[in-house]
Image 1: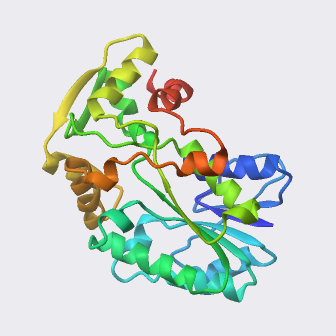
Image 2 (image 1 turned 90 degrees about the horizontal axis):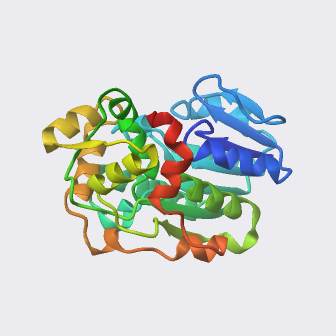
Length: 279
């Protein structure tokens, strides 16, 4: 049995589907009740209370670990989840980490994630670490404004990074969970191209067949919007990257192709699959 945390999110949902289609027994974990594929067990649970999570791991051979925003808070102890996996007899953990662990190692959220990576390496478990950059699905934050106003609002409109399709992250995660060739590896996951927020708005407009206006936010406006969903330090870390990406953050990684045998999907592919959200 494989446990997938964050199972109703942009990575967890396609990962759960892929594992179920591969014939695996899957336990999908999220904070709230949600629809899951046929044959998949769903368990509402909160990783911020790791000891309550112990029952979910009973009988599990592998765990996909996605840490929610509150597990980056100063008082959180996300490494407890690794200890719990060891104690529960889990044999393999695939951790969704962040590119910033390597490219911005001194950011507060990156220091915390590095500690989780280190705990996993030292756990004695089989492991793989996935380090994606920005997600194509972050563009869903613009869906309502596109639907109601025909507008995309974002900071740093002409600064781009090679954002990755979450479906590619899910496929790499599935490979790491199921294939022994991909253990003890760190995989940096990017898209195939550097793309700016303004270009993303143009891609959405092209798929809609309707104009979409781009409105550039100040950093302060962007942070105020982000901190409705993530801690302020995580918002600052993210804004630092998208304001001035360094050479490592602009690099197109070969790791998606190395694992999957094909190149990563471009942003317009994600838009085409997701366009209903913007109509």
